[in-house]
Amino acid sequence: MGNTVVVENQKLQEIPLQVRTLRRSRDYQQISLYKDVNPLDWEDWQWQLKHRIRTKEELAQIIKLTPDEEKGIKKASGRLSMAITPYWATLIDPEDPNCPFRRQSVPTAAESVVGPHEMVDPCAEDRDSPAPCLVHRYPDRILLLATEHCAMYCRHCTRRRLVGDYQKSNVPSRFEAAIEYIKSNKKIRDVLISGGDPFVLEDEEIESLIQKIRSISHVEFLRIGTRVPVTLPQRITEKLVAMLKKYSPIWISIHFNHPREITGRCRIVCDMLTDAGIPLGSQTVLLKNINDRPYIMKRLMHELLKIRVRPYYIYQCDPVRGTQHFRTPVAVGINIMEKLRGYTSGYAVPSYVIDAPGGGGKIPVAPNYVLSQAKGKYVLRNYRGKVYTYLE
Ligand SMILES: *Cc1c(COP(=O)(O)O)cnc(C)c1O
Ligand code: SF4
Image (cartoon, rainbow, N blue to C red; front, top):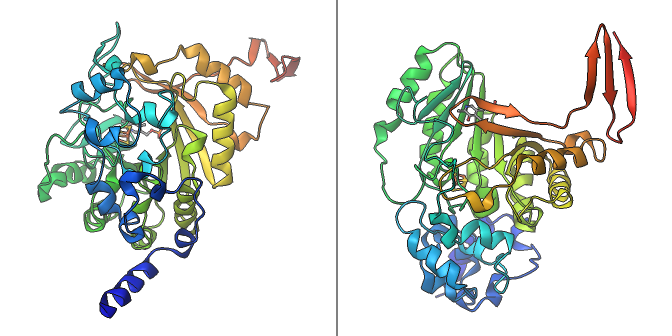
């Protein structure tokens, strides 16, 4: 008995001090389903993954489900089925069906409606795949899809054709052809490891993949796209961070959609990563009634700067089948950009892009500041609409 206490105390030391002393606005122990969970288990990412909410019955113990959500959960079995980490579940408003955490994670009946221009693979990624797990669109950089699994499945996911828990394909030689392709293509200087979420893989799997890419001499830039700092912050352990640090420089892009996603727990992991010399950027999907108001987007950008994450992209929501209810007109995105530029720090202004349907890559869309251009004379307007002339 005494022995167990010692072991537990030792394990407790493995949890970073900031986490042990963190003040949470709403503690998981206030939720009856989790009231008896040991803090060590709560901080264990494998425990979090194993206890993800996957059924209507489990979710109904935490939030009051609407008939629309019940229908959605039933239909979403199979691909992109529901999976919600206990961490994320504690952030959901039990009473409000419009809660941003809830809308991003709980399926609704609208997902089975296919809109007029919606496609299975809108950015034609499968067409531009020269080897399994690769998408090669730009000459100098390549996207490597390291896994089709994620900690939580976002209802607006662009890769819903690939992503989900419907199959396991973890053959060790999975990346062989991909690595060979990158090796033989000397123009590739930038590799983006994404998925799915690469950080649902074990440390050893991630390290072995990074090692293989790092050993290719013409690859000079390596980045990882992830959402776990937001959906499963427990995954960013000191051990993982120490491993990543060995392969510096590595950049990380984190998918953030709402200012409330930046919890105290999330801030700790962003600090751990930044302190290890890993530059962080954000990617945000413009989502109707979630972050489509300029003041919410601005607050998100400000909160990101406060945790040393540089806003990188805002994406127009891709025309993926079953996501019409998330999509806004393009004008909404342009208006958000208009309300950022000039009205806040330049560092808080990301690029708003449309990933061109058919596979044209990311195209920036911005308010127009050039009113006319002729014979060495540019007529410009500033953020307040005042007109200025620049002579060349
Ligand atoms: C987004 C993306 C990249 C990286 O684009 P950047 O603008 O350099 O961040 C590379 N390949 C594919 C297929 C992509 O979709
Ligand atoms: S984390 Fe990314 S890949 Fe995974 S479900 Fe969400 S949007 Fe899709």
